[in-house]
Length: 391
Image (cartoon, rainbow, N blue to C red; front, top):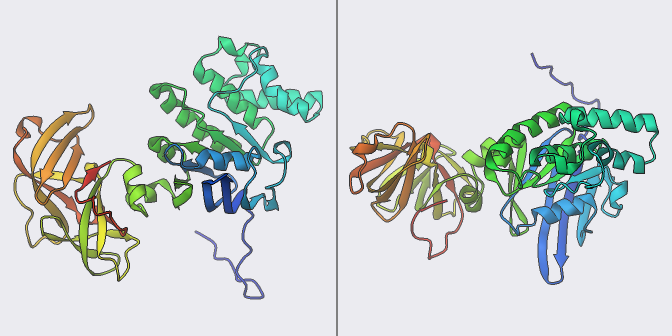
């Protein structure tokens, strides 16, 4: 049973917990180019926080400002509640783990991990204890006397992670650390990395352009685009209720269909007109106001069902498009079916239960979905964007 907190004697709200990291209006310009544009975020103690976005969106520049390798043009950077934007890297309670591992090739694993504590002039016993603890945490203690060239890529990444952990930073910064690994090993390392983060209890700030990786690892994600943050939320919220069209398009696979907004019903549902003229209700919304007239309907392929007939008009819990099968693609665990639908949009459906022989190209089908699994994003769509697209 949760305990109800008593109000303070003065009636004021409880004090705000000090964050491990806070950025307030941080901007970084390189000449006339604005790489990071007035972003603000908080990372809580023990949180796994990811910066996600395409190449050139400003995520690595943000990480380098946190580490102290770039100086903000403006804004504030707080570490454990203290101003840190002008501190040199070695005085910050952060460590940075690179994609390239950055291990000293002539040093053993043990000496690579010990390099930081030795530079901090810790005692020999303290250095020895910290190195063993860090290497055991990443399951590399038995390789302590090997050189990096005798290790696999995954083992080198573990050593780089141990070197980041050994100084016990308040925030560990990771710049696409798994990017050099093959797909199978990368997925294995994702699970291990999350377990290590839970074990050590340190805040991680993780930069990646891999959406699946961010969804797998993160407690919260900041989606970045053109130097700005589009949305900060837990993975489930970003996937199911993207705040912007960019987020819907970038996170996972989505059908994005332009619609006309008619009227709002019971919040948060909205009545919209599909490109074929059909009116349906949409389950959840982001950015819809009383003035919104055009918006984007977001439908995940895994939530679209295919049927041979139209949904019952009396069924207000289901929406649907009539279309024709364009192609069928076997993808192992699922079958993807691409459709050309009435009114212009192209949709994709993906499920494990589709009967492939019954879905030959040209066949007429109905693509249907449950209203509660649809989402509406209230953004202006450019005049050239007149059909649905599949991300």
